[in-house]
Image (cartoon, rainbow, N blue to C red):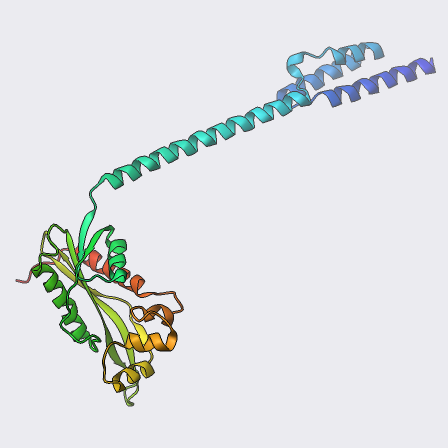
Length: 284
């Protein structure tokens, strides 16, 4: 009798372990299978409960292999959905790109053949540029804001008089110069700053806007050496000998390559273009 009871308990425990290892229950199926197996164990003998555990409905049983395949299928669907979404976004971006590039670009006339000025105008105004050689009719190295302004104005006038801007939408003239600043009121200490004056004209409406670039401080010693040499050429030539840099762009060397001249001019043109969009009322 004891041996028969022990055998029945062993068979019941083995059936439970087999049932737990072969099946993975979740949610409603888990509760149904668990209740059904409990009802079989309460009413039947050892052989009956093992038979009942093995005869659970197949819809309530989810093997580990089937679950793994379902997870793989879900990952596949997610990857497919992500691929379709990326393709849709790429197609929309391409349509926008084609629409933008198909629009006619603005034509910009620049009163200079300097590569730095041409690149700055092309980047700031997003158009095709054409440069023309013009004269500023001021000293090679302007030493005041007024003289720098006159140089830019003379370049723009020469550009328009020579019909070099024919067919263009915008005309831009740029002139760099030194501006003297006093650092202290009671003493003779001074500082020199190089900046660019930009004049931008809309050739369709005749409106103009003026802007200046950010100033870069020039060493007073370099300005003094240039003045002692007779003021010939530019201060950039003196800095080129001292710093082994481009005489047309000492700004990059003086700012550790962070603010080259082209970048400063580009920002100034952007400011002038933004000012050109503002409607200024005519004086009464």
